[in-house]
Length: 421
Image (cartoon, rainbow, N blue to C red):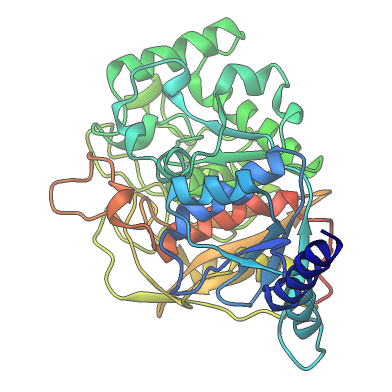
């Protein structure tokens, strides 16, 4: 019996030496080996939501994620169709030592807490058919990242500081209802008028200005603001026009201040300056607001590609995080505000992505907070009659344009690092 036990112990020892190292970490690659880039962000967010940490490996295999191994995490990856690699502590430490090499443009950023996400959308108060094409709503749903919807009333009540990350999309903060018949229905307009009257504003434009100021205060107080399309352009137009009537009589019954252009105060804006307002063409007229938009009369089809800048992961961690991707070349896409005219962008705004004739992707800091402006409506959208139809992201799981949105979703979770340059 004693000899038998000794033999079993010997066999066990031999098998122990022969077995591979135990898996203690899961690496989620974000290069071309990834089966679903967009859902991978949802995995990272879920881990943060479960009060666990995620290490973001900047400029390593497309901005990969490293997490502590659990059987539940492995199952979650398999269920969501996300590629992963189970690795040992020794392998994980080896990767991190490699990324710490001062001669390499790589680094590790610790993500510690899931951001509380809100989307500013008229879906809160009206049918808003056009909102089903909001790229951020589409990708948050696809990646299974939870969020709440707010609109003017929540902003006016001062509720934004309860959250970390706020998204604006194809919104009009000037009170001109999108300047486009296809953008807002009569029900949408009525809903905004009701909120304005409830809070004592004579006109929607006055109410929207108060909302724009509330959003700016949220950012300055430490919030993370992400705006796309006309949400970015009209926010700055409204702020610059504080106290100036820029709304034509077709929207509110009285005329524009004839000196409105000269009274704009660009010192109140976040990203843009020296822009010229578009004339009043009425609700059924053009859909442009100003010459901030380099895309023409709104929804002009973009062609070609824009390029992401390569930032230092060790010295410029913030823009490095916001530009993580498996490619530096991104397909251009149209929108009511397709892209930003270079000469309208303030010098203190950091350009993170640009096309040949326009800036597409901007970053800036305001007080204790940060903002990102991203031109265009839908990174995988097409003009040909389907602009009212939501994009099926099952057909675009590797979209580099959508990855930029999700970089912004994870960005607030990073252990604070200020830009060094």
